[in-house]
Image 1 (tube, rainbow, N blue to C red):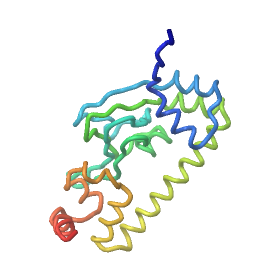
Image 2 (cartoon, rainbow, N blue to C red):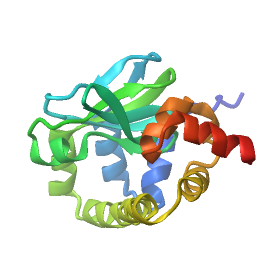
Image 3 (spheres, helix red, strand yellow):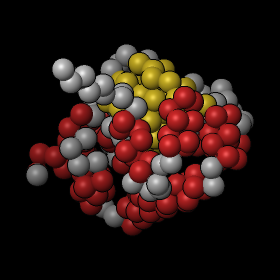
Length: 196
């Protein structure tokens, strides 16, 4: 009798890396042993402002938001969903506190990779440098598009760009968070959506 196939829950993570680099058996084993599956409930704080960010999360299922407070108001900086990494970038890279918090907008399952383990992988697997370069290139492209959209487009164009970038995701987000991400009022956003 044939043994049933066992599904490795880290397969989505390995598949993500394989889009950028060839995962050797050794790197696959080391990466797999250094990630842990974590669960967050809707409303949980994943990372709090003022703390050093020592972990990065690759989302298997769910939705997280990175934001900061300005004059007591939450300003959404970006949203991360399935098959995306999230951390507080400057804090993670410099190992210093910064202004960002991360919370769960939905029940979320993610793979946690600690900064020390990431450092080990970079030190021991040169192909990780290629992964970082290629994956960060697409992230930087997204950030430049966002800056251009925020600086040089109308509120309607900002929203259209948001819907393209977050296609399939924008319906999962509260209107107030989308408005703060776009830098417009919720009333303006409601009018724009009503005209669509």
